[in-house]
Amino acid sequence: MKPHMRWMLCAALLTAALAGTGSSQAADPGCASLSVAGPAAGCAGAVQVALDLELTRLFDLALADQRALSDGGRALRDWHEAWIDQSDGCVDRSDPAECAVRSQVAFIAGLRRQYPAARSADADGVSLGPVGFVCSDTAGPVDAVFVTAEGAGFVSLMWDGTDVILPQAVSASGARFEENAGPDKPVEFWIKGNAAMFRPGNGSVHECEAAAAD
Image 1 (cartoon, rainbow, N blue to C red):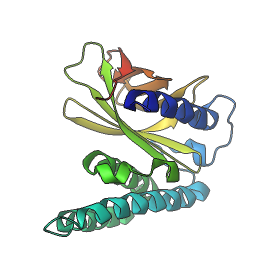
Image 2: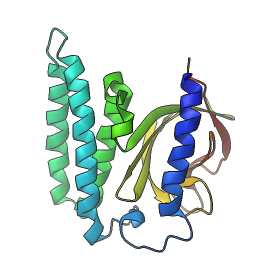
Image 3: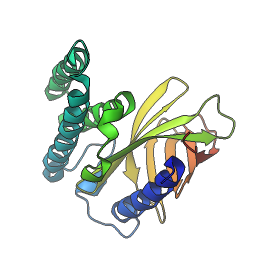
Image 4: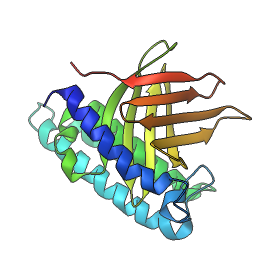
């Protein structure tokens, strides 16, 4: 299967998987309600466990590949240890659960972006990407990594030197991710099939399409 056809299939599956948890019909205030305000206390632990399993799976895939290099994967292990130290700091935050979840999603996205081997067994995990989107009136592509765990969906976006993590929001169709960057200026990424609508938080709106992989 050609890479771009594989993405279109994955996008359809992703939209179907996430649409239920973020739809207007989903009134469950638990795992699907993770947001900037913080995850529901009873759900945060389950989401963190699921994300930890996923990042461990990706880390093991990447490390198995990196061990063949001269440093035996030392750079990857050092990065992992630094991430653990940084994540430990979440306990001192006013929103420790939210901090921990975002840290896990960021590490998952980083592994997928930097280590192709981490993307070698996607059928076994709960993350997808990176996927490049070509958007109107932007200096460069928007890079997206999608993660879903225990009904909670997230997207890690990178564009023009900006890196954000958005939680899934309510949508009547497709999979929508949003967070307010200020009054009337949300950062939003709304994907439907291989197309998406992108608001970068400055009041502008961009139409995007998944780029066909080489």
